[in-house]
Image (cartoon, rainbow over all chains, first blue to last red):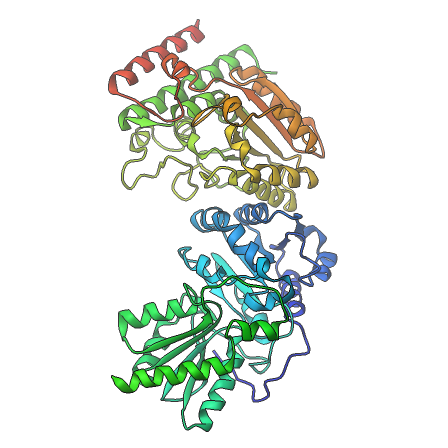
Amino acid sequence: MTAIPTKNRIEEDKEMRVAYCEALMDLASENENIVVLDADLMSSMGMVPFSKKYPERTFNVGVQEANMIGVAAGLSATGKIPYAHTFGPFASRRCFDQIFLSCGYAKNNVRITGSDPGVTAAFNGGTHMPFEDIGLMRNIPDITILEPVDTTMLTDLIKQIAAPFGVFYIRLLRKNAIKIYEEGSTFEIGKAVKLLDGDDVTIIATGIMVDEALKAAEELNKKGIFARVLNMFTIKPIDKEAIIKAARETKAIVTCENHNIINGLGSAVAEVIVENYPIPMERVGVNDLFGEVGPESYLRGRFNLTKEEIVKKVEVVLKRKERR
Amino acid sequence: MLNEEKIKELKKFAINIRIESMKAFGNLGFGHVGGSFSIADTLAVLYGDVMKVDPKNPKSEDRDWLISSKGHAGPAIYAALALKGYFPLEVLMTLNKPGTRLPSHCDKNLTVGVDMTTGSLGQGSSLAVGVALGHKLDRRNNYTYLILGDGELQEGQIWEAASYAAHAGLDNLIAFVDYNKKQLDGFLVDINKPFSISGKFTSFGWHAQDIDGHNVESIYNAIEEAKRIKGKPSVIVLDTIKGKGWKYCETAASNHHVTVSKEQMEEAIEELKKQLEEVMI
């Protein structure tokens, strides 16, 4: 694995959905078994170029997410490698039983992309704002849950998951991400990336919270606090080794996620810590609330998904660490 | 057209499916007798003649597929598979026993010859559509057969799948509805009326036929007709009796999942053996 963090974290020119479509077109050109499914959100997902180039391998079933998942599972049983997309809330809540049984339990070979995670659903608001998709998916045995952070990681992961057999959930920001990695970086599924080293505290982040975590680390640095930052892009199977190492070496952890703090990244990390190396830990994330509409900038503040909140939680966790 | 000899053979096969699954139910003491017996004649026609399958090569690429979305018909399917030679008849005695390869509901990862894992009603429909699409993509000349329960048609997913199957012109998909008029809690008409099942499918763009689901000749002919229909999927609505073949079960008020004592098992097998003798005459 060579993941090279960029020094210049700016908004990417290329949208995540464009990178997604390009990666799938590359895959499709090499492997005739690659098929794509959607439930009337192909244009939202920027997948029209794919559907034009590979019409016979594109199945837009219309507004029927549960059927889409079953059809994807059925296609995989005949040897196809399906990538099925819809918005995150539909890809998780609405199709949970289909993913659990028709995909997971039945041992079919399906990739499910849930786009617009958490507050990035912005103006689609409460109804379309998944703060619980990771939580639902984590309960499916053997599933792999990935949250690519930028186009470089997205491209690498989308291509990597074509070969292995199983059920994959890709939690995908659709629009422009903040660049975290240099082009050409590669990633190992199940292994966190250490973006910054430090010994005082470890901040473990995923998705849009990775950039916030790095910003928070910079703020903390000014205060003489040296934070380690891990990008935990694989939520399941979680990188136990990196978590235990961080617990042992920094003795304080703060998790950051654009998701409910219940049953998301924070819970997954806590499970590892309490069973292996209990140390103080705090969680930044949505505090068990439903979503609402608004600009993403407003929603980030509304749901405490900010660097300020991370700094605050780091200070809390460090006090707890001192008391021990 | 089936000749007299073949008709007799298929009738025998259907009764033997009931006898062998009854032995498994009796050994276990309970099971989904009603819905297993109502579909036995269709299974006999499929495995006894129509389906291109090879028990020695159960994963053959060009085989026909059978997906029972009413996964609880598993015991009848297992009996059909054992009689067809996929595995020894004795294996049927392991039905639902700890560590079994024959669970209540069909599981492709456990049972040789089972093509799909089903059980949560409605889901087999979409799976069958995906399988049929996959075969079309690979230009295989095989068929995907889908068995639906009548109560199962209350699941919305069935109609999502039906809608897309017709849109995709899946003429390699042939569905059966086991219209035995009863669901777990009682009669469909009392719980959630089905109205015209074939009418519903027709309006969804399917070719639909209504036939006697206990007449092997009608079943065979309906499948032949379905195969002649190009550009759309076909459904065959089977007029059936839940528990068919065992009078006690046919007439029991609640016959979806029943307890079966050793005496009842012997009584039922006696009854089924008489039916076998009648066929032989």
